[in-house]
Length: 310
Image (cartoon, helix red, strand yellow):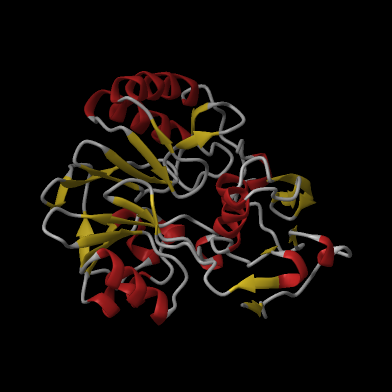
């Protein structure tokens, strides 16, 4: 059984010949991350290189990756052949391990930022940043993953839909005071630079740099939900920061990285943009130390999304 997707605005000339990416792509990287080797860099657009299908999927596993990309894309730019969608093709929420799930369905209002659900030992859950707002999606996450008690916002340009999800769940909406102007209706405000306990095992660590109110949420000394504070760069094969997209200070950002390298411990880097990575905690610490040293040499520059090293 298949259904025809209705949100396409611009299609490629050979759309009927296989999977394709339309020209609305905004270079958020989500499709390239979820379907590596199948979707890659294409021509330049307003926000940098658009995604393009490098080759058609050949196995069921590769088709599944294409649907991961298609159901995550904020502009709904990734399409199956003839734009015919399998009715049961939506894989989200998608487990990364037994406690963390990808929400998929990223929002254009969050520039395609990835959101997550963290399950807790008592059967409840927390949402970190938010997918696009759909009541049916909100019900799906809670039905499958547990009662969501908190919605945690990482920084000022990933705040869309936070109030809607929090109200739907009857959850607390969290943000740092440095970015409070972007979500002034938040219920719980993190202040200063001191860590704040969200719940057992879940700590908010203020991390200014990308924005004044950027926050890391670290759970169980294992998972680090980093927002846009740092990410795994596929091209650099290392941790990196978005030095060309700074709303606060690159000097402050470098200092935050250096401080975190010495004070924090985790195994998973779970960013809003860029690739995620699971590595031994000691290796992440060494990579964070090196990143802090590199970031201290990065010059201040005008915001330019096209210069991001995905």
